[in-house]
Every structure is written in structure tokens, then in C-alpha cells.
Length: 233
Image (cartoon, rainbow, N blue to C red):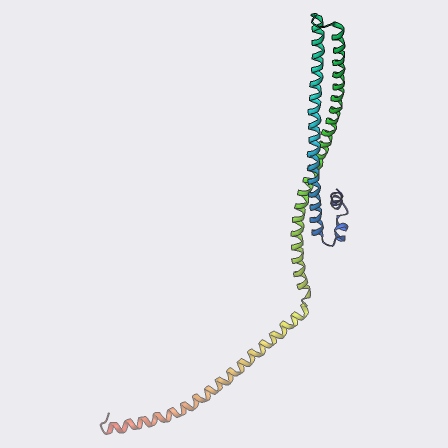
């Protein structure tokens, strides 16, 4: 029961310092539960054996009491026969005394067996209490183990997130964002500059085409006038 007592102490005021000293709280708790289950099996086996001893003592006591009653009946029968003249009175009294003596011995043995029965039954009751306590604590620690495993998973995940967050330098992040902003503004300005250049090139071409287009229009009008005079239109 040493591990059982140790786990009970862990559940008291010193739980935090005790757990801090453990290399692995989960492995230690699992080992403790395994040992408690082994103790439970031993307790159940001992309970069965003590219970059986109590039953045997009770049966033997009942048998001794029955035998004692039988000798008492024999003593009565002997005296009855002597009273009827079927048996010599002195011989009947002698045999009756021996029968009653055997009865007394049997009753003493029955009394001893009754004490053994009571002792075994009390021991069985105490073992049953220990079995109930072990079952309760095994269930309790199995539930505690489930909770502990869940808490460790959450704490590890939280630790990793916090660790990553702690490794992020807010100043460097802001500086990086500012540099990216400047780069974007530079790209936007450059795109606008290329757009202005493209528009200026298009305007020059328009002016040239416009000038050429006016001359071609004048020539076309003169050609149409000649065709009209010749009746070609």
C-alpha cells in the first residue's frame, strides 16, 4: 500500500512540490494506478480467503453443535431406558455422563470455532473497506489522470503559441511594414510616371496624325471637285 499512501499525500498540501520533483507526472500517476490495481487484486484474493475461512468455521461450529445436541439426546435416551428397566441404572448413568462430557467438549470446540468465525468475519469486513477505498481511489486517480493529460496538452499548445508570439519583435515588424509601404508607394509612383510618358507619346502621335489628316482631306476635296466637273460623280 506504499504507493497508495504516497498518492494520498500527493493529493494533500504538498502536491505542487511533489509534482515538481517528478520527472513525468503522467508516467508516475500511471505507475501509481497500476500498483493500486495490483493491491486491489491482492486485497480481493485475501478477502475471498478470509471469507472462506469464516464460512468453514461457521459450518464446523454448526456441525459441533449438532453433534453436542445428539449426545445430549443419547444421554436422555439412556436414562429413559434405565427408568423403564430396559437398562441397568448405574450403567445408564455412566454412559449418560460420558455422553454429556462429550457434549461439553463439543460445545467448547464450537465456542472456539465461533470466535474464529467472528475474527474472520471482522477481518473480511476490514478488507472489504480497504477494497472499497482502493476502488474509489483508482477511479479518482484515473479521472485525475485524464484531466492531467488534457491540461498538459492545452499547456503545451499554449506554450508553443506564446513562444512564437514572444519571438516576434513588434518593432522589427512595424519597420518591415513601413518599408513595404514605402516600396509600394515607389512602385505606384513609377507606374504613374510610365503612364504619363505613355500619354504624352500618344498626344504627339495624335497631333501628327491630325496635321496629316487635314492635308489629305483638302486633297480629297479637290479630287472630288474635278470628278464633278468631268461628270464622274
